[in-house]
Amino acid sequence: MKKWFVYILECSDGTLYTGITNDMEKRFDAHNAGKGAKYTRGRTPVELIFFTIRENRSEAAKFEYEIKSWSKAKKLKYIFNR
Image (cartoon, rainbow, N blue to C red):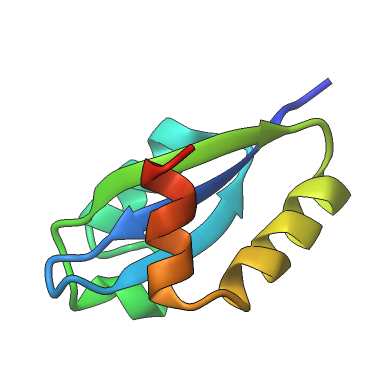
């Protein structure tokens, strides 16, 4: 069974991007090659600052949705104060 990753990238302009994928390495490389999400295309290079694994796409999408509702401060607190 495939694992799904929920991840947060820090873009070159200091903003954060949250996404999901089932192939973290391929998706990270796509972001840095300018072929990832439209949001990250002009903000490369990006740095992976957080990821977690979920058992299925549904769980990953729900957690991604939750994270996207958080402020930047809450995201950083969650990542670095765990």
